Image (cartoon, rainbow, N blue to C red; front, top):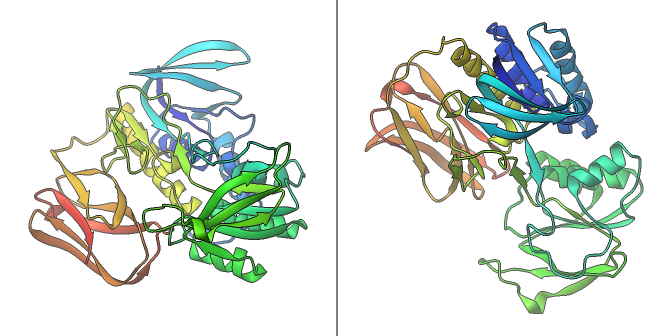
Length: 404
């Protein structure tokens, strides 16, 4: 039986594996691709590592530092080209070029990341011609395969990968006509709006979406227009724009398909976790599988916590916990991680996102009727994950996070 199995060899999986190994657990790291690194391998832009390493790196450079550490760690066994086909209590089933196999574990870390939402997920209307890509696929085409997906491009959605691809495609000679965002606020980081759109005079239209894709064999153009507060189309705003490529940056879906008998959080489309990042006894979640992060540095730190707790559980060293209390939020908060916390001593970290831009207000946390945390903020954007530290000793009842 393996002490700790980590599923996923991206930044979350590698961070968790290294952290578990530091606690002297025997670790198996499983990755379905033929190399470690995950999505970082195709993120050739810089901006990674500023928080964790204190220097600016590209995605492959950030990944390579962890790949080297993993390969040098004698407590970590790596299985590449390996798919997990089933997850059950204390056992997983895998398949790779050597065949099928069942593996037993004492603890498990879920670090499988996300998949992109496609045109089917958002019910994109019109025909189904060539020339419609997700942002991640377009990124791989350009950065790994050396192919240009189109010459006159419209990007739907203002997620960070879409914004970064707007700049990247411009570098490669394509014309990015505009970025359309159905919401009133962008979902990407403010710095990416400035560096990837504003610096290259690429227009961003909010409260705007594609009404219809036009084209048979290849995209010929789109009809687009404004939507109201309930996302209903405003037909009189409808316009035609000629283009040969549509790139979708419309959100990510955690890879939870293999999980059985686990409640899914509708706000994150992933699992509920406590402040040890456990979703089930001995099963831990981290990275984009748990909730979508804005910075890979935060993914790594969260994975380190998950890996450590998984190893301590496997080695029967995890401190016994008392009862938990749940965390609720006001309507202007999208979600929190964790979803419940243990009573006791010390402090815990609470992560959350807001649904719309907040300016000159307070982040407030109540335990029952008692205010236990308050922080004034000048501005918070939906694309930026917020982190606050709460004194656990002040928690005596259910928690409520709100913006006042």
